Image 1 (cartoon, each protein chain N blue to C red):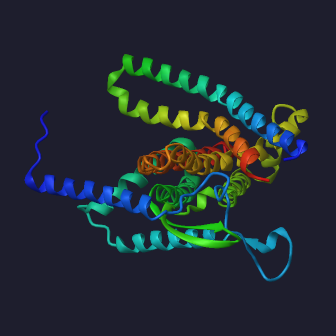
Image 2 (cartoon, one colour; image 1 turned 90 degrees about the horizontal axis):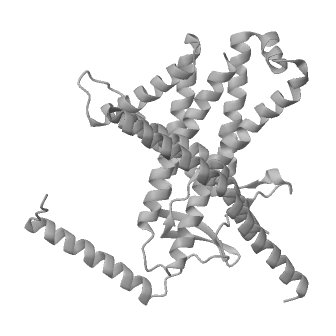
Image 3 (cartoon, helix red, strand yellow; image 1 turned 135 degrees about the horizontal axis):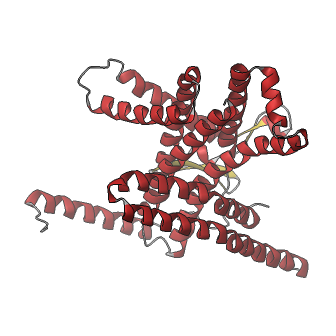
Length: 280
Length: 81
């Protein structure tokens, strides 16, 4: 196939290349601050609340801000397509396709009919939040970096701060899935039968079963955290090796958008599988 | 730099390198297996390529996680504390 460019395309391409070169010249001429290894990489803005002096009185403000921003964005998006029509529009067909796929997955994994709907609600909520949170980690935006003893807000130096690169968020979700799955199990099987499930093949296996259950949230949360956090650090390291001559945009695209969307799906599918395996 | 600090640095770098290097063996073998089997399945039934690719990527993402644990440990050794 021969690629044919119209005049408009050529002008647009010229503008894009000129803009790229202008950004490069601006960056190298003005001594722009690049994130350096060992300087501020892997550091976070931690705020000490005025009362108390324990671990519980320290918060991570960017995680809270970004979580609320994503939640408000999702709610606004949901409110904008309240009216579902028979002939779907663009937004509606996107949402229908996504939720239909997730509902199919849930029906495959959860055998009991009355638990399909709650499991699907939890899984879809988790997927939408984590998907948006991971995808914005592939888009340049605002980030708060502790630097020289204070906090600096940087624009377009790095990607948006994503709440899933903080282990607190992922561990909260994973523990939430564990507790919900066991609550469902107690509701589905009754307390005695649920307790008996821990002594399943023979009573001597009880510690094994207990550790197996408690290890679920650890691997569940660390998988997402390692992918997002490790991806972000790898982008910085690769960019640092090429002295930022190579724009890290395509690395952000790979680690943020591609890996991020796969990991959001993996987190959701594992949550469904955990719930489905416990209530059987 | 004191000798003690230098030894600590030495231990950190060797430890991070070993953690990442040994930890990458398992996911490498696992992902290779998944890729090979998926290729075989796709060659046998080319009409299932779409489904198989999605499942393959999912399985790879799950297999990768042990390697990512060692990556996290290596970063913690290098950057934290």
